[in-house]
Image (cartoon, rainbow, N blue to C red; front, side):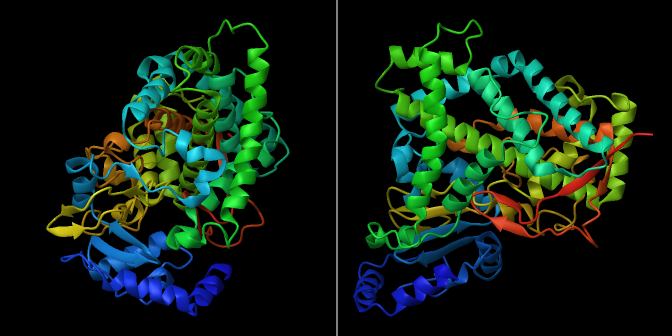
Length: 493
């Protein structure tokens, strides 16, 4: 309501009317893609609603998979088909590789230091190489395999404790805690929360608030002249949230600098060594921004995906039964799923793919921008246009997916479609140069957690849940369940 009220106030502003008519009436490019007719001043902002990914998917059915909108003073291209996504993310990847940075992420200069947001160039390549080679390479992931197994064991132990007292488990929060400690041990060689207690709530709330603020519509992004006013307070809140996380990292860095180099040579040690050798590219501000990217993306997206997967499995008892049978037959009932087991568990992997299809963690991926006027499929895209790839809509495209709204992991048993950025029907991690570097970790960790939870317990809905599970989405830069999934783990017979 706050957003709508401010928009209506702007609608009555004479100064902005003049600015908008000037924008719409002068130098209008020819042959723009189709899209809804914009209103004065607000353009098509009123069409976004509370769930923009859903609203824009509906509009794409009317105007087509390459759709052009004016959102305030910002021109926006929305891509809603696999073919169009391939054009943007593969065929013309470099032209579409610049990020469109939300105003709030200028807080603490995060966007200037983040490998996610800085432009493609020598500095981006250096930071991306440091990130990939020290965390997400095959060798690094293999070396830390024992750590992931340990964290999954801790997750199962926490659920076992709940089962003994017949208490429910908040699946998203438990998965968040597991992901948080996995990353913190990889980077800092220590837990940031108690793995056996329902702690870490404040850190989860801060991370969730960052994702929510970054993802929700902000008037400053559509009317840049409001930047100094920050009418919705998005930048002020992000300054506070990012500052809290940065202070934690700063304390850990100070603590490490006062110690001798760790014998384990964890990621923090490696980054600090790189910082000494290459201070221009990797100073402490950059290190903190990289850690923020890792913890925000690596915890929130992983925990929300596991929560959606468990929700879908609980809603579909035949899926639960089939998954449990596969686990029992291939690794043995009541065992922890290890990475070496994943190749023996094709149906489990299909459940994960189907979850990514229906519930991509970042519905619009990370927004892009074109630096120069460009053509796509014969249409002209003006310089400075924001580009949103609606992965949520592509995953539910009925021309690609039979029974597109149904949760059917079986569809992947005979399909070669994968999530690694080569099949544009399923791109939860994006594709091209800007593909999510954490993909290799996520595709190991999520099925391990899901398989271990299914193989070690029977699950029942919390007694407070009546009727079908609520599937309402909460929109931010990630899509989360509006109402957390709470389920009771039962000891196996």
